[in-house]
Length: 335
Image (cartoon, rainbow, N blue to C red; front, side, top):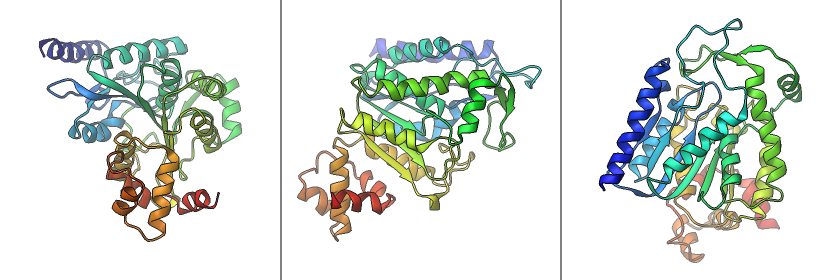
């Protein structure tokens, strides 16, 4: 108990000292930690998106903390630094992937001190980093949960620009009240994640992997969902307990899906979907079987009982199935 308390205190102290020395833009960009009084069965390590900050995972972090998890959301290298940045003075984002990889590995080791099983996750480029970590440390990670990981852009022209143009780019939504990060960036700083994403798609075809849950949205105007489906198809061949969920357009959930201020009016639903995965222990086929029984007129409870899965599923799964594209379930039943 003393060692655990000392460990959590040290994590907080070191993060505060580092971020005061930078200094950070504001408290929203500070690392977020949700520590239980004792080590936990599950520990979640989340990586925020490109040019953003830990604030993106605060709603999910609080929800999981209330469910008994330890949660770490560390500020990424070069992010959240105070300053008047523009094209002549771009923000200090790393241009070498090794900076991010060293960061991810060090936080994985820290997370392992706080509980028995580590779950990693991230949004956009943070999801790319989480996917890389998952494939590199397959024996040390229980599951991963990837929110629209950036493997490639929806627009091939954008990918081309990211690959070849050494320009400064400003976000179209830089004035969004939920954007506490940088307004723009040097394109080469994003390029390393595009390259990493393509390498992940190649690596997952032949390498082992823990189960993954990929969450995306039809209203996501940034990432190419065909690559997300390819990632899912590759990983589920090895890990049948991998899941894939895409929010329908009617929810209008954007790429920046983690907070209401960034445009998601259904953050509670997103958090429930994530918890459904983290607190269930069934294959994707079983998820679809439950959904099919519900479409046939059974209650969720009756379907779970009939399939002898009462002790293996979270009640939150019923909420996820109610929001799920019914065609996915019907297509499964027809196979």
